[in-house]
Amino acid sequence: MTEKLSDTARDTVLAPLFESGWEMVEGRDAIHKTFKFADFTEAFSWMTRAALWAEKWDHHPEWSNVYKTVEVTLSTHDVDGLSSLDAKLARKLDTL
Ligand code: HBI
Image (tube, rainbow, N blue to C red; front, side, top):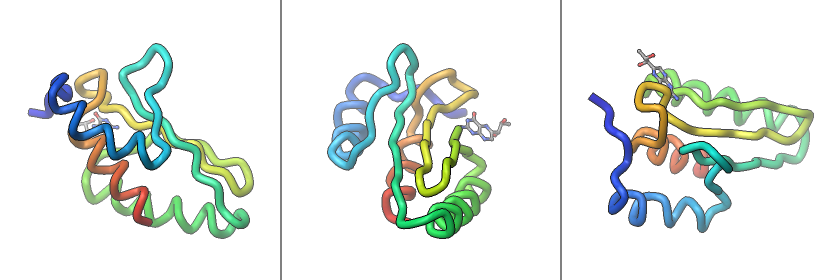
């Protein structure tokens, strides 16, 4: 059963993500990052790679794409907040 990130876990797990541009979403227990690419093809290719990881891990982003920008919000619906799955997917998205 997925659990919400504990306060202590948040300090260690979220700090590196904040370093790489992720931010807490105002009023939600969720994290958000804006990814900017050279063009639409780069953006959509990245989304395709990200989608395969999301499906493999059964953990999906809330995201939108306008031309070369992709807005990503991560939260775990099942716990109505952040879980380790969000941190795991965020770390993966930062490497794609
Ligand atoms: N993705 N972000 C997110 N949060 C979830 O709770 C979630 C998901 N993808 C699939 C999923 N849950 C399923 O495991 C459950 O809906 C059964």
